[in-house]
Amino acid sequence: MRNILDKTPKALKEELYPKLRAILDAPDLQTARLLFSKTVETYQAKIPKAMETLENGFDDATAVLMLPEKYRKRLRTTNAMERLNQDIRRRERVIRIFPNRDSLVRLIGALLIEFDGKWASGRRYFEMAEFDALVNDRPKDSKKVTRIG
Image (cartoon, rainbow, N blue to C red; front, side, top):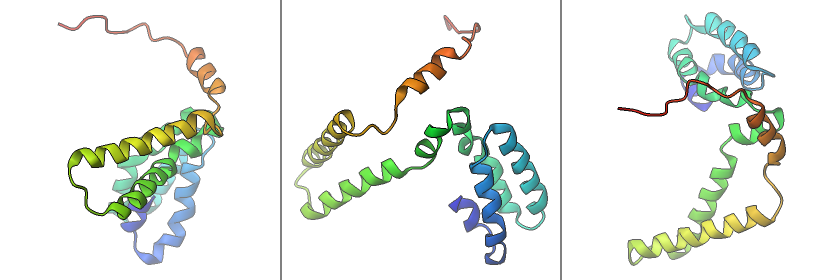
């Protein structure tokens, strides 16, 4: 979203934003593709660089539409990674200069272990039962590669 809006003139940002938001919040992939094609058709002549960015990132941005709706927002955003990076930076600022690489690895490793413990024992970020059922109900692909070479 940011990459597309960065390549959009200020005069068109407010007009384009709701259309991009609608694509990302579409209930299914077919609706997202329809909104995508209409948006590209409307704005291709006005902002070709922004539309090229949209075209290049469309498949990546809409990959979560294959999942149940309750997982989409958490997997579409980078909030969890940003939170972890913020916590690493906060602790790194206290030390400022590490004596060696191993001390940095120990600090980040300890932080990751702490986060893992919180995720394992605390409030669940995802309830995986519905996701597991989705994966198990998917038809198996009979064209598996069993040997290469």
